[in-house]
Image 1 (cartoon, rainbow, N blue to C red):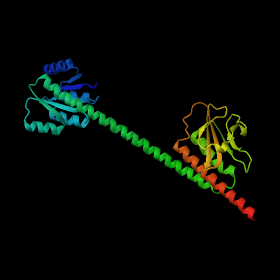
Image 2 (image 1 turned 180 degrees about the horizontal axis):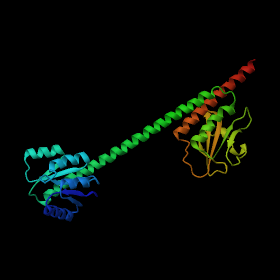
Image 3 (image 1 turned 120 degrees about the vertical axis):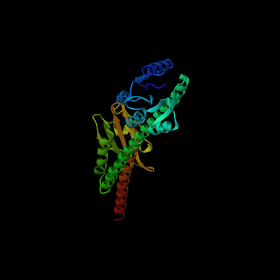
Length: 299
């Protein structure tokens, strides 16, 4: 059984009470209406997956009731009770929206077979409706995500284009770090770069209320190829070390610190896009400086 009750519509009180009692004894939940008008008033307030109605009633006739139900609640299934099941009546009832009909007099077991078939159909319709709603929600969410990612691509492309005119490291990196702060909300970060020749790495920029460790504490940063959780005490409860590289050439090291558990992951595609664009900008400057040194050496 489904939790919503069946609505029984019949102008005869004895029929209503008899059917209601018989169906209730078999586990159905039944509400009643003594006219088509009363039925419509109930339907306006709640959804009935199944409506069992007599065709021959004073006031609003059964066929007109079927049409009104179809307009107000298309998901409701109507089973018609009639003492005159002619072909014309059956066709007209189906045209008005009836799911099935049963002829008077009938046995309770015959009625229950029709009702069970209708209720199974109602369950299937509900599943389809839920599936469609879930699918529409997924499509809307995915569309929004794609739109947001497209906007992210445009913003980062603009940063990369702007970085191409920079000839110094700090002004090149700063816009990327500003974007990092607003997009991923770290509580602190440090950006390290390798020195020239045999010089060790050094801090280019940092932020946060913690004291970052000495450069020597990080070990051989050039050997780190993949992002990993921070292995050096920084004062943050969660941290990540993220190398910036081009092949075997280290370009920089980003360390992110978070107070408390964060939703950040280095594999997030928006972050990977940010990282790749910054690596492209750093590589461009690295090549430009190398070319400048080569030309200076030939001068």
